Length: 367
Image 1 (spheres, rainbow, N blue to C red):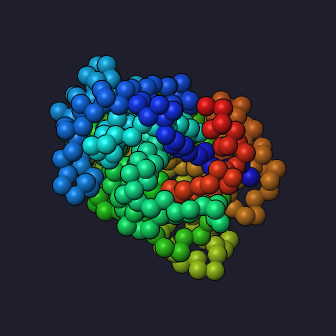
Image 2 (cartoon, one colour; image 1 turned 120 degrees about the horizontal axis):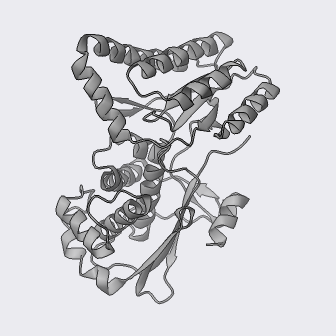
Image 3 (tube, rainbow, N blue to C red; image 1 turned 45 degrees about the vertical axis):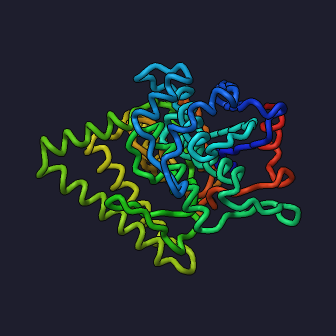
């Protein structure tokens, strides 16, 4: 079984303590700044009396853009990553800025709807909060991996959400919440709540490698809703009903999912995908993906904003490995990237160096 793409941050003091170095090898970015230059910006980033998460203001973002030499309107991955880094570093670390070297290595593809920016923001927030002592840094001599308390996770999530605001402007908060807490979450009317007792689901995660703009896709759905309210509102209501039925099915399977449960989930996946096409967030690449997996007896739907990006394919326990292999090969022949993984990762964790998988350890050592 292939592992889910991961995002990992490694932080250590800088050699001369007078610089900050940020290394983002998967996007080819390595930058450094003098602490003395950054110190001059600190007064503009210390607004919260209790040092809790604070949303970035337009004025603060203008200060960072000027400092980093980023033009207004620039939306490339490197520029947004740098702005989020600087905002979180200055806002969390405060008056006594520490010299440090930080590597954030991510296997999550950008612009694919997999929450790469949220994983990045969660990693930065956890690293800076640990560095400043705002959250605990338990010794790892006797354990390889540890989780923070719920209160500490709430603080990590709050700051990660601010990093997401730097990058996206007005995010929902879902991606950073999933990155922080892991597991399964329910998002409705702006409220995010964990879903308990959800069984592990094996899936095929496929990246069509077709870039898309969430902002443009959301605007398109809104336009259709305004133009055809009597048509679109029932479709959106049905999508909500699908989500509620899916949650009911998952939580009713206290002793594991039966064959009937899987059949219901597959039907819901198919209906949902058709609805998503109706509201205008489908794409020919996703149609092709669904056709390929259906030819092998599998059921798929888009994930994220749609318009390309990624899709998930449910893998029943009784599916033949040869069918999965054949589907993956055919999807690869289409130019898509596939991971065989499961839903329900544990969220942000603190790891000892000895506990890291070989590929993670090797990646961090070579940067």
